[in-house]
Image 1 (cartoon, rainbow, N blue to C red):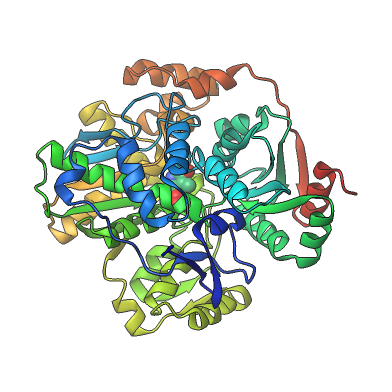
Image 2 (cartoon, rainbow, N blue to C red):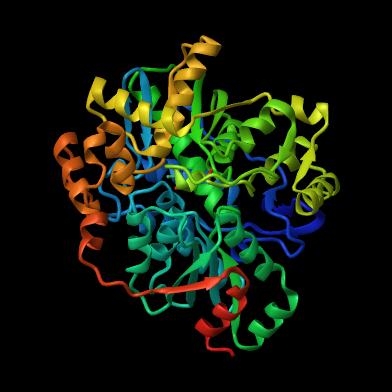
Amino acid sequence: MDLMFRSTRNAENKVTASMAVLKGLADDGGLFVPETLPKLDVSLDELAGMSYHETAYTVMKQFLTDYTEEELKYCINHAYDEKFDTKEIAPLKFVDGKYYLELFHGATIAFKDMALSILPYLMTTAAKKNQEDKEIVILTATSGDTGKAALAGFADVPGTRIIVFYPKNGVSAVQEKQMVTQKGKNTCVIGIHGNFDDAQSGVKKLFSDKELAKELAGEGFCFSSANSINIGRLVPQVVYYVYAYGKLLSSGALKPGDKMNVVVPTGNFGNILAAYYAKNMGIPIEKLVCASNENKVLYDFFQTGVYDKNREFILTSSPSMDILISSNLERLIYRIAGDDAEKNAQLMQQLAKEGRYTITDEMKERMEDFAGGFATGEETSEEIAAVYKKTGYVLDTHTAVASFVCRKYFRQSKTDLPTVIASTASPYKFARSVMEAIDSKYSGMDDFDLIDELSRISGTAVPRAIEEIRNAPVLHDKVIEKDEMEKAVKEFLGIA
Ligand SMILES: *Cc1c(COP(=O)(O)O)cnc(C)c1O
């Protein structure tokens, strides 16, 4: 029996895993969730010796049951190859009493690569399985990292096109340069005058526009999503939490059954939700600590049970977490509502209308796996400087948010469990903020000079992803108003 996926907004809407990957978002605007969260079918001891690829297969086959073993292994082997600069794929580094799970060794040096290097394979395999012969058009809104990772994953993949929208003034210089220099005939990158939530709302609107879908179908196109709402992104992210547990076992830091904590720098709530799924699969995780920057809508939610996006949007030094509508939270809401699509749909309607909703006390009790914390810009900079001065290890701004929150959580909860921090980006990607945190003398220096200086003071090589963009020509320079997104899509597809 295949595991089926249901929409969080309509219990009747059920599809196979491969259809869920292909569609991205359910027709009713809901997100696909597995009918039941699967368990691992190996013992914890067995995880200890597994490679990343073996772990990936062990985890993913439990979710994506309508993919054959051959298909799934093909996807895994093509995703996690030399695009990563280490065979370990996701190394676990022990620094200053914490375990940093480095998720930034892929093509674009941020954790989005962990899922986006496999999504194109999962998706084109899904298209074949479901006799989908239309060209797949990936529409993506990005707060900086998803965009480049999706572009890198889908560039020149036959049968696909990809369009990325990013907030023109809301991403780092390196992030923007990475995107606008993207090669590949099937790629399109557009800046919008607005913030990430504008871009994301615009994309969601295009997805739910039935008339547009019909028009596109007539021209031989169908939309799909590479955003973290696609279950094909969530499932590959479960893998590295299972892998980290296996590594802690093989290093002797844990015995099978011992618990660990996990701290995740959070924006759209995809990464931490994957950790929650790992816990549900049987990985002994004590707390899932959700770390926010100054856009601390999630922190407030965990404190009060009120989700309220009606607040000032703050541009921070951790732009990939500058988000007020955390899309993947909907999957948790659905779950703590007792898998009740109707209840969830009501709350999401309130969110769309009033920008806020309140959950019941009973629902709040079901969130006890989670704890929340946040770091201000100053605390983030201090964390980078402190860790560097003590150990020589350089954190990026997102990881530093989590690292600070972790430190605070240790103090408050007096936990002594091994703690894994999801390290979501290479410091090279946010060199300016990182270097200015370490020493104010670096302000005013050119971006690429800062990168060379970072290499010098950290004793690490400049990643390939940075070398590639140093002198690359800009290939995408379009900037539009936020109400012109549909027009831009049609222009790129050649349907006026
Ligand atoms: C996307 C991203 C995050 C946030 O992850 P979510 O899954 O959206 O919560 C954190 N850090 C970096 C560097 C990112 O790119």
